[in-house]
Amino acid sequence: MSVRQTAEPEYGNWVSTKLIYGSIAMSISFFVLSSVFPIFVVGTIPFLLSFAYFAYARHMFSQRGGNLQAPIRNLVVEHLDWDGEGKVLDIGCGNAPLAIELAKRYPSAQVTGIDYWGGMWEYSKAVCERNAEIEGVAGRMNFQKASAAALPFEDEYFDAAVSNLVFHEVGDVKDKRELIKEALRVVKRGGVFAFQDLFLLKRHFGKVDDLVAMIKSWGIKEMAFADTSDSEFIPKALRLPFMVGRIRIIYGKK
Image (cartoon, rainbow, N blue to C red; front, top):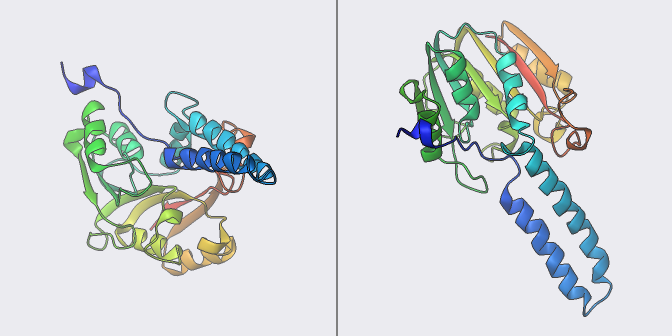
């Protein structure tokens, strides 16, 4: 039997198991301390609440739970005004769900996914390749390890570029706006882009008006800013600022 017939893709979860385990570990620690120092029982409550919330969020994002990751990442594709001809780059592809969705929607496209992988995230190049094989698009996909801060491609190499909830996580640069500039560097003149991230996070991206003005100053032909956090399918409990309450999409044509 082929891989496609015997397995399902594994696209991972935005809420790491390490975050879940960390919350419950702290809860247990404070509970044990409270047997000696009763005051510590108060400290148990926030960690228990944190554990409950992140466990709920992980379930809602899970493929076998609420599967909310799929419609959220598909917002990127919906804002990409592309005919599917040529090469597209997914910056920070994780386990490649967005890259694979592009390959499935655009059968003529050549799709490249880059990621640094490792760290706290349960993603890898091997899983990307396996998922692409399962989904039947491996022949048109390429994955490589690279940082979003220094893309290993020539200027104007791609016809389109996308990214989903990645820029704010990149530790190579303090000013995350530089990551947007680097992403646009590899897009051809006349090419298109759609980047979704926590663009309302001022400490990373500054004020929205200033961000928009800066991107336009780079000579971008067309650019728009869309609010995606208020999408009806996202539960109110997940629209908190530290979850997806600050997500927006920047999209347009170079």
